[in-house]
Length: 189
Ligand SMILES: C[S@@+](CC[C@H](N)C(=O)[O-])C[C@H]1O[C@@H](n2cnc3c(N)ncnc32)[C@H](O)[C@@H]1O
Image (cartoon, rainbow, N blue to C red; front, side):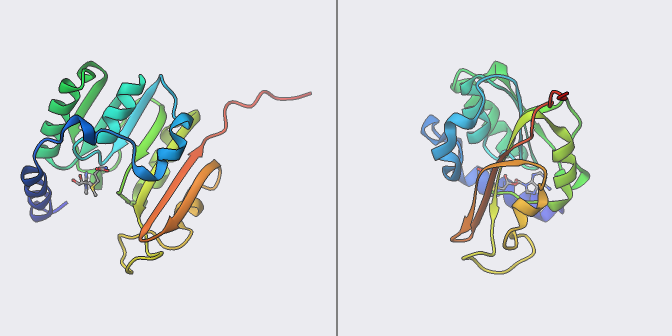
């Protein structure tokens, strides 16, 4: 990411300040499916911002690793996790996802809210543990403006064809996908 874009994100988060614990929560598009998220295991939050989603996952019982380009957001996420009593289950790192998805163990949850980088689709798929849950939301061209950073109609489902879809939707400028990788199938016969 360019230095200018990074600075813009830092300024946005500095202006916003550390959120209160009321801000902690899963993206609204997944709210009706909270119970689909596991309460143990390892999760990653891709472009985690101030960590609202990651900390929600940690509060459920998951160990979470969040990445974001903004050092300001990452500092705020660490503070919010401490304040929420889940600092020990959270790790937040400054990462430029333009350089790819950082390595790590298979993830039981891959969570990424309001962020889209098509180059990460394959690495995320490769990282998802058998039985793991993928929860993605992104700006969409459906009900929104056109633009290369917005998901095209049907794009999220098409990008992850092998997964079992739990919920998906698009409209009002947003697209989302909640889907599970099938577990290790026991061979029959
Ligand atoms: C719309 S915000 C969403 C933040 C968070 N997921 C949420 O739901 O509040 C998009 C985030 O993507 C991050 N981002 C954008 N480009 C990035 C990159 N190349 N590497 C890492 N993070 C990036 C920004 O810093 C910002 O925090």
